[in-house]
Image (tube, rainbow, N blue to C red):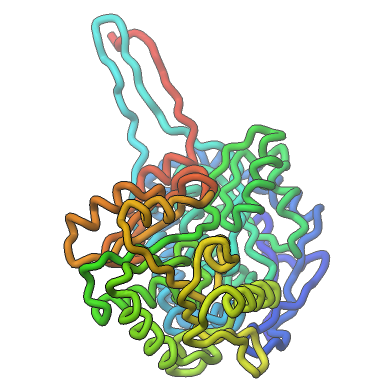
Length: 469
């Protein structure tokens, strides 16, 4: 076990409390982690507030250099960060390595963006200019499924825009984030970035804190509602990236053998613990049986094991609470559908669930109507294209969707009618820092990535006056 500390005002400090962090593959204690008190949260916010004026006044070119320097540090320590991520999150080491390198790529791209002044009008008697100004202290609340990658969705844009930051990782996956903080603490001026931890007791304090001007939150829709209500007390800006019940629609012209691997990856990546994963798969009746069989074959040949072991494709679920939730979905699957692959928790230490395929199931069942966030995929048969579009849209969620077809024009026609922030064609989970990302309906508010995401960390200011002489 290593020693871990909080980052507050440029110093690594112990928490006023401690808490254990478990390895989800063994259920053994991986490390004792610092746990911040309310006083330490207040100290972190105060440090960020004190650092803000100088950081906001720093030219964007200088802020950019420091964001890019952090990417260099991430890459130089990618092996260590990936191993630590696997041990606390559970994902296979190859996937953890991809997450760390993806983190660095987001830092590099988002750090390369700019916030130029825009002239709206320059006429005989009026010159109108639009500026993007920083907001102040930003609070970033990070979930446990992609703790480092999702941090990179927020941190580079927030800092590049001139804000200072208080980061709170999830209680079950804080270690890689704390180690990242330790690695980069001397890159930034003190107080610009602060990292604290909690046992799910400081999120509410952050969202109502009078000195935090914006909350960027990724997590469940239920928690997002609480964040929004709490932030309303001080009219904070918010960006919410929330849950999904993403539909995949397979048209009648596909080759099941060709599309099955991409569909499986889109549903089971990170053991299904992806907000944008395929959660419901609607399959045309003409290819239903064949596609079921192809997915079953893949599921049965997928290696599920400790993520640190070579050859592991899927690791455990990340925590006991999610493990118990997914077991309840398995009960529903056996009750309301036909389980044709998997269907059980694995008889071993750790939070392991067999990759599960369920056919002959319909809306009205828990597995189809709710977000399972685990390695369980229901396949629903349909016959009519207009009907399946209606059924796919009949949800409070609207994060992502995909359409699978050998005719891209047909797929695009269906995609344009789906009520989702992102719709893929013949793929799923294809994301990049230059592509804006956000949810419809109760899957979120606001946008991340690209210029649109950077703008969310700013206040639009208009200067309206006469033309310069």
